[in-house]
Image (cartoon, rainbow, N blue to C red; front, side, top):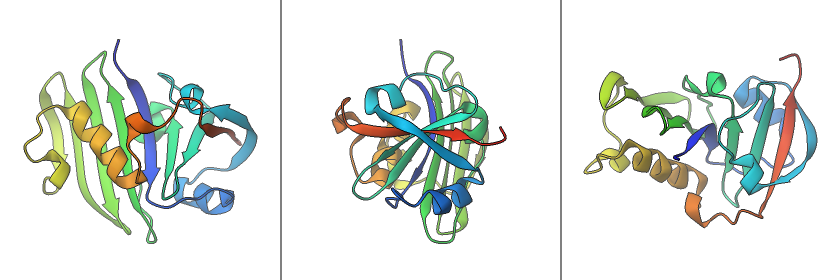
Length: 162
């Protein structure tokens, strides 16, 4: 079984800055509890919750797919948004750089359905879209996805008024 995850990665550590994170995501977030990265990164995410992991240099938000199928942008950050569904071979990703959306792509079963912007460096020479997404998570987060220990801390937030 493959990954079925979706999320938003911000190139800034926003731990203890919930108001700014809420503004970037356009969501009202309430802290619920601490969880482990393994729970945060589980396949699929229930509506009304987001699980957040903070690296030294970035923020990784795991959210339901509906929140991750369009690009986010913010003047003070680079943001990578993704939906990676290996079981259906459907992928979406978008990258914005300090308020400007520079790339987006939707692919399903090997067919590109929509594509805007010039290829990113991570896409050149790589044909596996899952690997492109994992590499762009790493680039934006500042930490390799597969090097995050499953026991590292993450945090569950509830979306108010969802």
